[in-house]
Length: 121
Image (cartoon, rainbow, N blue to C red; front, side, top):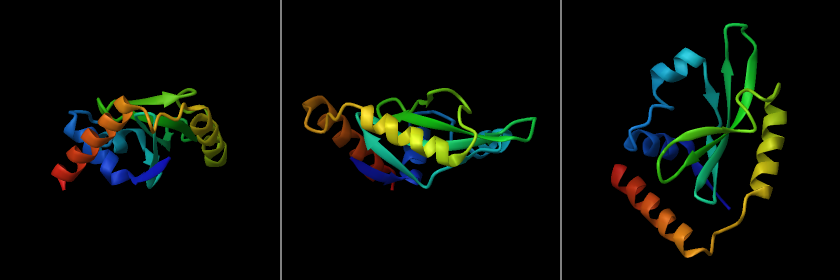
């Protein structure tokens, strides 16, 4: 299991034509997110929070697919009342996530992703 700087995840998301990390999107949802992501099983996992019209800040566990750049909520959007609860859920998600570090398909996807990140720098 490795960690990666969230800026690398932001770049990959944009390269794939996605808008999750764009400034306007983040401002609209009053989003905040972790500085790093955990890379495992073809995804980059991190926590985020959004502040809705009620002004309550709630937290989510996110997974960005490294192949497509799509970001999804794991366990529900704004499912956690505190960052501590979201981080605990993230640890459980990572623990349950199959470890395919030695799987050839995953190795090829990781190499492709790394090459795309290097090309963007």
